Image 1 (cartoon, rainbow, N blue to C red):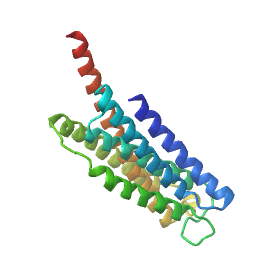
Image 2 (cartoon, rainbow, N blue to C red; image 1 turned 45 degrees about the vertical axis):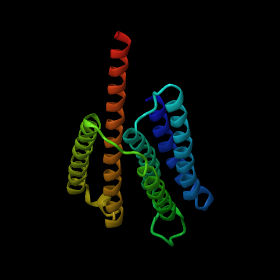
Image 3 (cartoon, one colour; image 1 turned 180 degrees about the horizontal axis):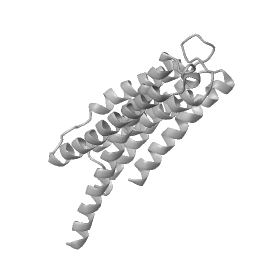
Image 4 (cartoon, one colour; image 1 turned 90 degrees about the vertical axis):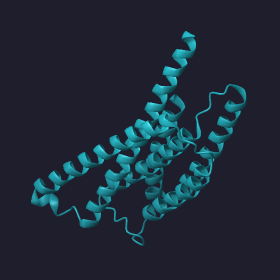
Length: 207
């Protein structure tokens, strides 16, 4: 569990740094994020294969997939938040920066690597379905809460400030809320897997 938390937080930080670096250097950095995501997936799978052969404490296929999507989503969320936080930057394609291209590059990499990852043995049991349901519920509730709060902000935003919030920016903020809800979903699933693993280890120690 500590590894998955550190990997997710690290991906979040990398996403932020890639967006800021792209703006400072006026250079596309999305391919760096794409390679980092693919490299992490390959390294993690090798480590889990070693654990499977040595200790048998490797995460199951469903948990591995959740870990991958948690890292990928954190990378995209960090990049998106940093992009939206920079004032007076038009992120439309062709407006003097590579932020949109970088974002789509990393999304493409996540889809491609995710397709390969999903081909792994994905046999689910009742535990996996329960954990998935809890994560989905947390993600759905956070999505609704985020959209409701944003709706109130839009409704009560002072006119002077409201003029600077374009429809395009509002749309991107809503996308950020959706991505955040997905990140919460995967985080809850990882926590549930960790709790279940700890409980099983405690039972094993007791025996």
